[in-house]
Length: 532
Image (tube, rainbow, N blue to C red; front, side):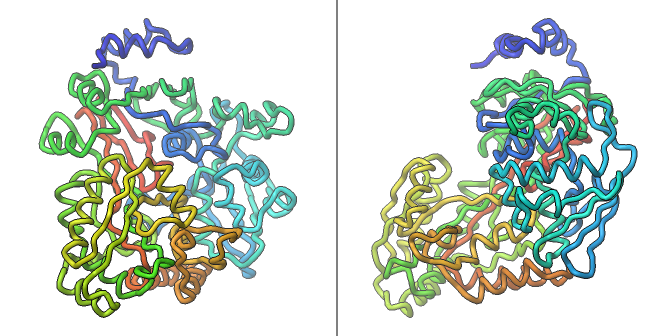
């Protein structure tokens, strides 16, 4: 068990924060220090143009601003952040952003359109993992300086290779890969043409509410308030401590050793939901649990079989009994919280209807099939429930449990029959999921592009056309309508049974207010957090 003494001793182990200062801070329970227990071991970089893991994205989101950001309450709205306004040219390829004046980086340096242009050029030229989010507009290392320009200190002009929906462009720019860094600081730290990547992996140079004090991998992240930023509360520092065990997180929260616990289990959250001494901040996140049917299998290629599986599943029962505080029933490819999401849940358990559909497909007596799934909970429990549901209509499922990476490797090799897995959205636009589920232009084994649909040999020309049409629709309202139509079509005409959407919870002491959780991890924010 992790004691308060051990916790403080661990915090004192890194040089940038003294044991005395931390010990004094906790003993006095100061309002100026927010302490968070969180699993922090999946970060590889805090360079916002490289980081693509959930925790790193969250921390970067608190240190950097982007041109625009999604509205927390209405996913169909985009809010200004560094840009105060924007417009699209008549050619659909030229976009002009007016940059707010008076903004400063944490160094005190003024933020200009040149910083914005250089930052986007940097993202494109480094071409790290998340760069694809903006290189899909035709930008590359060779043309970035020409297509991403500052025409004066307050004007940024972006040119795309093809006519582009401004809504699509804005949502992509709201991702961390669109973060604006201070050119003068980062450029001065560049080594061997790395665009300052080695420096920004463990330092910050942004205009966000917080700046990096220290990151000790798998131990601690300390953020301090940006003295030139927009934070107005009493906090001076946020300390994120790597606490793996949810039981230890809960105990520390209840004793007041930490202010927030971020990784409590569903069972723990159930015990806290009526506890007046703890406040639960919850938000649906863009993570889907689903069953994939590999249509290269003769038993799984008939659309009536797809329908039968979807009508056989007890979505409500699984959610209530296995995932009550961590997931909600969701059946479309665009998660709740993203623009254009269809939150209708038309499929409910109807064994008689499912059995009739199976008979129409030529399987009146069912068949035997194998289903891969992750071995970590709650996946085995979900898999067993699915096994029982399908047995009621005659489908005998053999469960194959394995580590996450083993299941994914098998799916990427297209060797699964059925697979229970999860899918996370890459950026805040419905195209992120529509593209991977609906557009599979080359179904050959050696295809250059291998989207999620490819893994199950699924091709549907109509779905692909609808996805492209929605992506390129210039009118934002019509674009949302097209995505709704696409989701309805996909739900009824695909070999994917979307079952659940995950949720994120921050369990807070009652004196903590203003924690915001977003649909994507890069929107989780302490910008409005205060501690009484």
